[in-house]
Amino acid sequence: MIFAEAVTDISMYARFKKEVGVPILANITEFGATPLFTRDQLAAAGVDMILYCCAAYRAMNAAALKVFQAIRADGTQKNVLDSMQTRDELYRYLGYMDYERKLDQLFDKERKR
Image 1 (cartoon, rainbow, N blue to C red):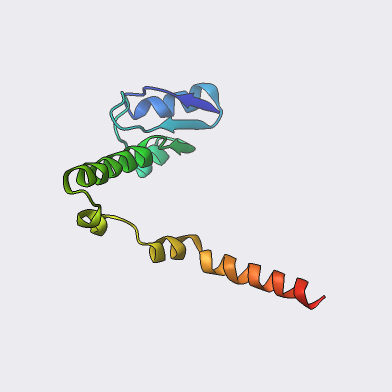
Image 2 (cartoon, rainbow, N blue to C red):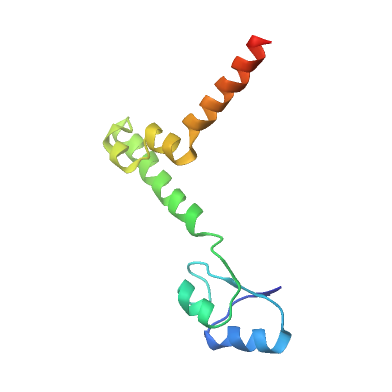
């Protein structure tokens, strides 16, 4: 696989693919040299894998900063609760209760032995 870095034109990916004949990885990071091409644009240019290495942590850092600024200004986080994921939302996303039920089943079998 070729990690094509700092590609500035979408056609460069197709050229890489043609010249090297191996899978191509596009690094799509905000504020870098490569434009924020869409998944469809990259697929059409022959890109096999897309790396979005920084997007999530940049968003998390910005959100965390707002929370800590609110705590510093207000002495509490209650004014930013609406921007937070609830415990129920997290558990639903993770399938946490399924995990708990499975643990209960396993331990119940152990107790019956």
